[in-house]
Image (cartoon, rainbow, N blue to C red; front, side, top):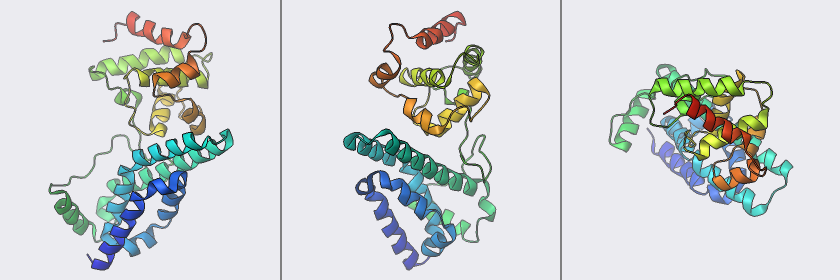
Length: 261
């Protein structure tokens, strides 16, 4: 490892720390930074992987900054869609690189062992290769992949989680339910602490579109982002304006009838 690489790495980290000043442009910055990995390796050497990991670890923080930017500036629908599209592209790029590295650790480059030694000393622990369940292969748009039952965080057995998703599918795979209905289902599960809302929107969308509709492309990511609610107030504004929320009642009936607990 060289001092020059380390100094450059420290400077790159400062750019992450200043993300709040970039606001929604932070996603443009990420895409630009990671568009040429060969150049990044020249700049950072063995710190390249650590820098990309730092970007991934900060994705929730970036999302918070951008959400605040959107709220404060009251962007119109077209601008919001453009920002969310860049967000999806940036997050997909980061996840793709991270999981590609994890799946191909032995062949990345000759400095891999050096990087692991440095990473271990930095964190004062033994680093282990990350096991990626159901990870998509390099070249796919979204690197992280989890099934809907894996996203359920209720204190249920794995069998109960699978049964819960199965009975939801029995109801909501019906063609009478459209994109907004499926978003209603997912949002209701989110605000009632059924699913892990810390996961990226694209992971949640694909998991439930596959589980309920057998089609991860059942709806566009932008549409999902606009209708995926994580708070009771947002949910009420989107889905509970009518006198009776049919989707909510359907889910509760499914849980009761099938004795899901």
